[in-house]
Image (tube, rainbow over all chains, first blue to last red; front, side, top):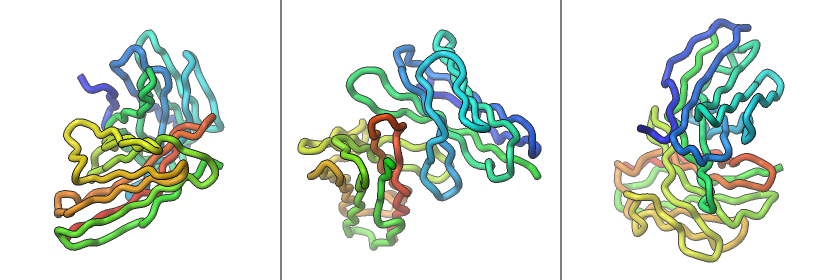
Length: 112
Length: 114
């Protein structure tokens, strides 16, 4: 089992729709969870991070965390063509060795 | 705030030569920096953790003699790819975790070995 798993996609949604991206992780002791957006040929840029169960909203983005189910998701409301990118879920290991483990990413295409 | 600057953005080198990549934290101090490698259509793979003033910690399977890491100050870490070969061609990205922010990434270095 991979440490961090994402649906590889591709995921296509029409402009204005809600895009839902999912991620599961295997280390129950993981504490912090990050969503990054990566455009082709560019480095990842942070969308948001979450460490408490529940929802966290930032503009059109909402991250949802359920530690009991070891599941984290990202919702993108009112999707725009500029949101078309690969979305990376990353999990920070528990303990003193603070490192990120990335999922394989979900490729999202927002159709005009 | 919390910017990580990485240079060069791209480099082409001949097989057998060495290439140095710099990663700087511009407005914060980074006792720890991370180096990733990303092959086309794959996710980021952590290569090593760079620790200021001490030896880097390498992930399993990463050759420490080939990928030399130096973290001489609180704002600068360098990765040197020694005796580069075409299979080392990749996208190298550094990262740091400033307080109160998520991990911040440099802009990446596209290395092509010919």
